[in-house]
Amino acid sequence: MEIDETIERATWDLFWVPPGVLRVDRPEILYLSSARPTPTLNVVPRIRPEDEGHAAALVREVAAAHAGGPSRYQITQRSCAGLLRPELESAGYALAHEHDAMAVPIERFTPRPAANVEVRRVTDLARLKDNVAVSEAAFEIAAAFLDTELMRQLRECTAPGCRVHRFVAYDTTTGAPVSAGNFNAFPELGLAFFWGGGTLATARGRGAYSALVAARVAHARAHGLRTAGLYARLRTSAPIVQAQGFQRYGRMEFWDRECDTSAPCTTGTPPA
Image (cartoon, rainbow, N blue to C red; front, side, top):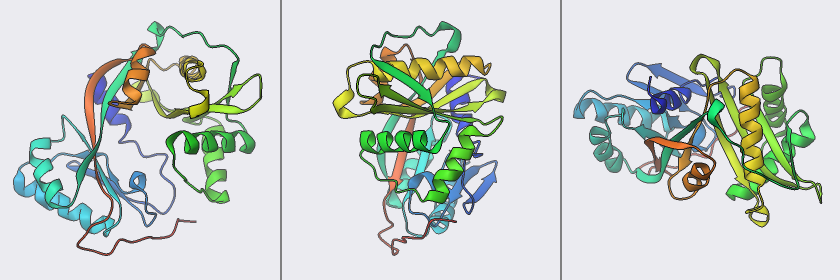
């Protein structure tokens, strides 16, 4: 299996999805649908249309499932993009971001030096809140997780045999959290799939992200994983990740629709 296919297959494993989210999984399509208005829970990680008519039918099915709210497709070279792009444009989607599939063999990874930074794995609620707060600030988002959701996330990354591993980098001179990042483990693929890596704007350029990458790679090695991989946004994250020794192996596109202009945009409520 090629590395870009390995990384794509990791996105098909939906073990992390919270309760109350609909999953549809057939050979030609995999998608999630939720009342919560977020693209990560209203997403199509895999689609394989056979022809134009089939592509149109699949796009209509997803549009109905996502009920006018935010919706996302993840398109790779195996997604028959030539068939899909015209249908997606007709349905109100637009190319939002391009990502490089990037990876490094764990045994070949060389950590970069970092000073005045200590990386700690998330093991309690306080550290999880630091992880979330740094990510929200770094990516300029406001997730506003309910307490029940935070507790679910904490169990997800602390339970015996957990597959989610979350980390926070702290400035040792101030004790403040400055960077955060995570990975999901896919033992059957030998892959540590990195996600959510970000550093506060005021702390960039001082090695916090390098320390965070090194800590995640070391943790992945300890769990017997062979490769660290991720999707890095083309003009922002990709050059930073490449400087850490990761190589490009393929491309993935986000096609997003904020709201369907032909239907009322639903707001929904988070599942309990």
